[in-house]
Every structure is written in C-alpha cells, then in structure tokens.
Length: 234
Ligand SMILES: Nc1ncnc2c1ncn2[C@@H]1O[C@H](COP(=O)(O)OP(=O)(O)O)[C@@H](O)[C@H]1O
Ligand SMILES: [Mg+2]
Image 1 (cartoon, rainbow, N blue to C red):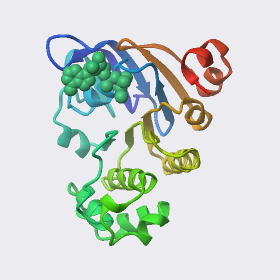
Image 2 (cartoon, rainbow, N blue to C red; image 1 turned 120 degrees about the horizontal axis):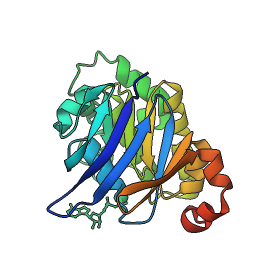
Image 3 (tube, protein in one colour; image 1 turned 30 degrees about the horizontal axis):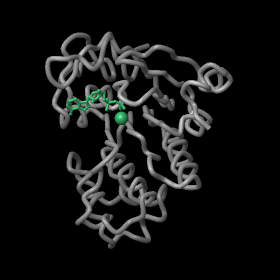
C-alpha cells in the first residue's frame, strides 16, 4: 500500500546552505502526526518544501503515489494537499465568508462545502459577515483551517496552529483537529504545545537540525522522560 505522503532523504533550503539535511517522514492515511523539535530545526521549512515553497535539492516527496518534488504550490493543492502557514493565513480585510470562498478557488462550491465547514466551526457561522481582521486569535485559526478545508484535502499541513492561543483555546483547536481526522483527512502539524498535541495524535516525530531524529507512537513519546525533559516542556 502506498503512503499518503512520503518524504525521502530531502535536502534543501533557501539559498546555498541546506536547512533540511536528509529529512524522512511518512504519513499513511488519516492520522495525526506531530512534528516537535527546537527552534530553527527546520520544521516550517519541511512543510514549505512539501508545498513547493522551498527548493528540494536532493531527495523526493510523493503524495498519493505521485512525485510532487518541487511542484508548484497551486498544483500541489489541486492534488488534495492543503497548507496553513503559521502567520498571514487569512485575508484580514475580507469577511469570514469571503475568506472561505477564496479557499475554494480551485473548485466551484455550490455552498455544500461552506455549510460543512460552518458545521465544524459554528462560531465562524456567527461571524460570517465580519472581517477576518476583527476575529480573535482562536477564531482566526479556525478560519485558516476552514479555508484550507474548502479544497477537500486528503492531507492538511498545519504550522503551529495553537501558537499564541490561551490554554482553553489550545485544547479547543486541537479537538477540532481530531474532528478533522474523523472526516478521513490526514493531519501533519508542527506544535510547540507538544504534550497537548501528542495526547490527540497518532504519532510524533522529533526534528533536529534538518532531520527527523526520532519517530514513535504519540503515547510512547509522551511516556519517555528523556523526550519530555528535552522537548515537551510543561
Ligand atoms: N526565508 C528564509 N530565508 C533564509 N533562511 C531562513 C528562512 N526561513 C527560515 N530560515 C532559516 O532556516 C532555519 C530553519 O527555520 P525554520 O524551518 O523556520 O525552523 P523551525 O520551524 O523548526 O523553528 C533557521 O536557521 C532559519 O533562520
Ligand atoms: Mg517554525
């Protein structure tokens, strides 16, 4: 059986110096995989590389059996892979509704998908005519995820979806991600709230200096005191 996503021995970066130094990662289906690791390890860079925003110099990336290495971002999205960057992930001057419409740019929506997204995120429906710039941090993150879901992806990449959120909103956001998995969508996410994320995840990987140094089932990572001391924080 082929993996949903297979990142194999990827080297690459922004200029001449590689940030990724042989990164390997596989996602087999609708599972939640959390990437943890120190600042500057290349977690965000790896996501950008999958989405065609950072050049892969060596190695390859396959999605659903197809080679997408260095493929343009819009073509990657067309194949069913959605990416929510950590920042600037909504259009602040557009309304919630308009942001969702923009998310559907690849496929015309007859309204069904937007309705489905408002079912997952009822708060967004209440704010549908409000500009995204006026939303709270938590609502904005929900909107960014909702917008990404408009293309009906098979896999969702989330870069620190709970960054800068209050603890209650961290849990709420992570529960939404669990709900997204239950729709049959795989989720690869970078998280600094590592413990809270691993409690909901299937697997975790630890990235250090541009490589995946360790990978295990989430509950095993949570139980390891060496990992906890180094990476899991409070
Ligand atoms: N646009 C960029 N241009 C050049 N270097 C960058 C750029 N973005 C990130 N880097 C560098 O790449 C390294 C990895 O960054 P990043 O992938 O953002 O790490 P992480 O997400 O794990 O904190 C860092 O040394 C960072 O300074
Ligand atoms: Mg990052």
